[in-house]
Length: 191
Image (cartoon, rainbow, N blue to C red; front, side, top):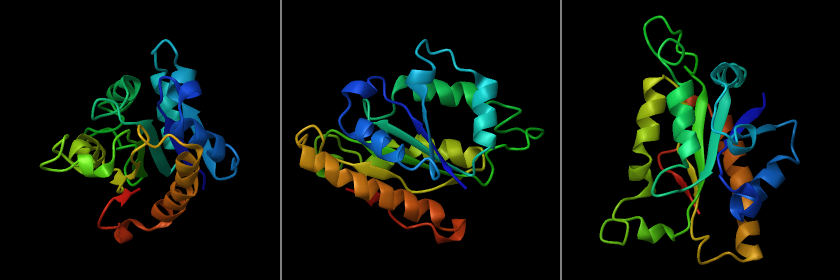
C-alpha cells in the first residue's frame, strides 16, 4: 500500500531540502502520494471532508515540514485543528478514523542537532519539541512512529549536503513504515 506524504512548506519553490525530497518522492508514484497543503490550500481554507477521506484511504502517513519556530508551519497546525475533529478522529462515537494508522514526521532543521540539547542554545531536543505531535496522534489512537530529522541545513546548504539527505530519507521511509507496530525503534532517526 502507498504512503501518503503530507508536505507543509509555505515556500516550497525556494526550499532546499523539502523541495528536493518532494522531487525524489514524485519519482515513485507507486509508493508515495505527495499532498502539498500550501499548494492545495493557498488561501488556508481546508476542505475537511476531502482531507478526512484522504486520510481514511491510507494506512501510512508522513507529515513532512521544515521546523518553524521550534514547531511546524502554521497551515499544518490548522490542518490538525480542522481535520482531527471530535466525531471523526476521536470521541466515543467517532470510530477513531486514524486508529492503527502508522504516522510519523519528517523534518528539516536549520541548526545542527547538538544545538537541540540541554545546555545548548535551544535547550530542548527535537524529540521534546515534537511531544505535542506524539500526544495528538496517541490521543486519536494512531500508531505514532519515531521521526526523521535532517539537521544543519542553514549552515550546510551545499548541493552535496542536500543530496546526502535524499537516500537517508528514502531509507527511513522504507524502514520505519514497513515495520509492524510491535517493532518500533527505541530512538529517533537523526541525520
